[in-house]
Image 1 (cartoon, rainbow, N blue to C red):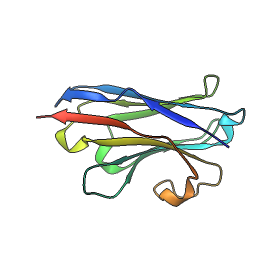
Image 2: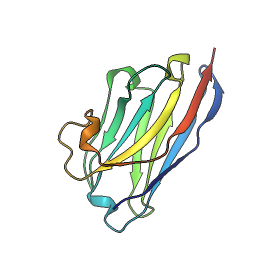
Image 3: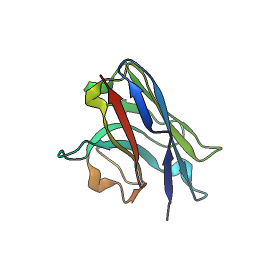
Image 4: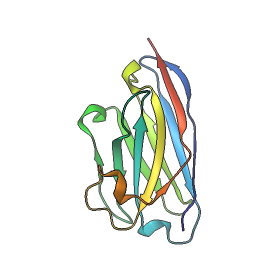
Length: 124
């Protein structure tokens, strides 16, 4: 079992930056693939980025490449999402998710554990 708690959301102007954090419970955090997803009003939840366990790679969806950076600190059981050059279309509730058997990082059903989400609003 893993419990996830996101923080760091807020209101920011276009072009600004925010850093989201996701703190996880449990002693096997390093074995989990961690993902960030987002859901805008009226839209489906979509993948943003993911990072595999210790020494694993990090991947991003095309729309955030070069602007967002995901990192993890296994000693602190925490993952981060540094978001730069934010755009109004980045406005959404952002969720972190965890799974141990993730093959395709964009597939929501491969992550059994989810946080409650944190709102990010980007004004134009």
